[in-house]
Image (cartoon, rainbow, N blue to C red; front, side, top):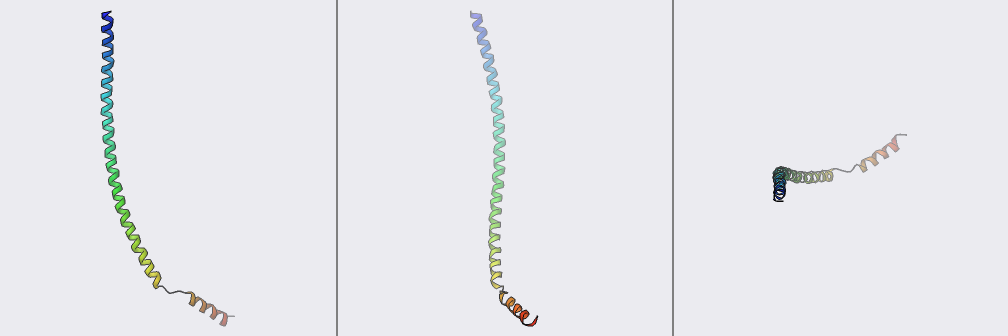
Length: 95
């Protein structure tokens, strides 16, 4: 009975040792994966910061160009009167 008990304890110890080693390996792999993910997150946050800065610059450029376009459109004269004059001229003299 004592031998069987010792054999069962030895088998249990071997199984526990295997679980302990496999868990430490899994923990190392987990740590490697988390470190890699943290590096990717850092890269992504840097890139998003760059994109946000570029977005702000482009929005300011769009504002300046829209104001320029408004100013130019305000300075352009209407061609409505000229078109009516031409049509009147054509009606009068070209028959």
